[in-house]
Image (cartoon, rainbow, N blue to C red):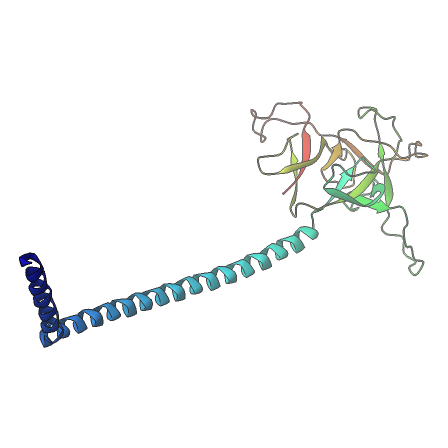
Length: 257
């Protein structure tokens, strides 16, 4: 019985203390302040998350803009690539490699070797010319180009073919005299021997790169001279030797990038 009376008294005291706590204004005020602080923390965290969201959104927009710019530059590069390098492959009727296309093949030509004051350059004439009769003067002429000696593996009098080629992968082209390979970063289109006109002839000439595996034109075997070419030999003196060597012939290579 005493235990029961003690338990009842304990429960009554606990209820009384709870009522006192609920009616305590200081306690209520402190709890309200605690709740306010929690609300403020939640608001602050929400604002922080909102700021981070805006930052991420801005970064995303920046990346989207950069992607658009890079895409435009890529398309521009593709357009530039489509405007590839043009070069002549002397001595061949075709173009090398899988990244080139044949513009046309034709006949190598130029001025007559004994005409003083004639044009210097070699030209690659097309097989389907568009000619005219509207002039009457006879002051400038076009001749074919021939192998004069057997040094290139073809009999003298054989005519020289040529092909105009376009690189679809590179936009720059360079013929390097004295080299049979390209420098780093450049792609070789073909290599061969450096040739030019005979020093004793009156007509000016130029250096061109004759393909290592040159061909001839069918039906052009008579020796009519015209635009002639010969292998080019190094002469020491004003030319540094070494690296060059007297009486050695120069190679050449055509490179693109």
